[in-house]
Image (cartoon, rainbow, N blue to C red; front, side, top):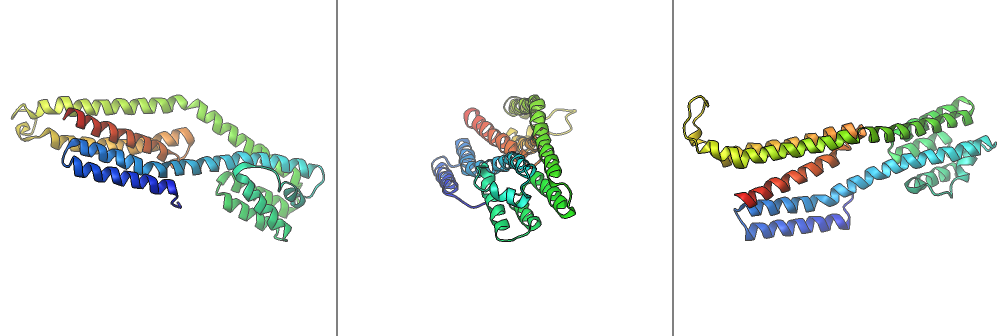
Length: 274
């Protein structure tokens, strides 16, 4: 990822806040809370950039459907596919426009359709577009009815988009439940840390516990809980992303949200109640 001005600004603000918190509140729980805030601020631009990239990929696939439909209309009117692509050069396809322009320019200087389409698929970095382009290239090489193949490709891409939208709508409740379950888990961990552990650590030696609770320290026991919540946050986000969008990669945004919320809630609670 190329670092932009917003990335440098985020890192700068995060470093300044972290430095100030260490200098002013060294050794206190407030320092850890401010460090968590600085970490979230510093990493937020990178996550926003990641989300923007994912949105562009989705937009490319949506615009590719529009592109194939326009291409089908041109080919069915009797225009060769190479000429049809060049005719679509001036149309607006959003984030896909520059790739269509490059495809048309390559064809205009004599590059074969197969090679130009391979470059087009590689540049878009979309599996949906790559599969569709492979079908078009194979049809062009085999000499089949290209308009029929293009129509099938258009229908296939449209079906994929429809299924994606239906899936997202159908499992939206599951995603909401996943977040609710996680927040309940955090509440349970906080109650365990601030209410139960102090009571257990003050009991003294107790038979049947299998350990000397008088020597246990609630602060020492709270550290493994904190680590467990962070691990749970990361993997719960990946699971939610896999369920919601069918890709573990898309789960990183959910992991970021859960990790940020976990850090802010746990460190904030310690700053207030300890």
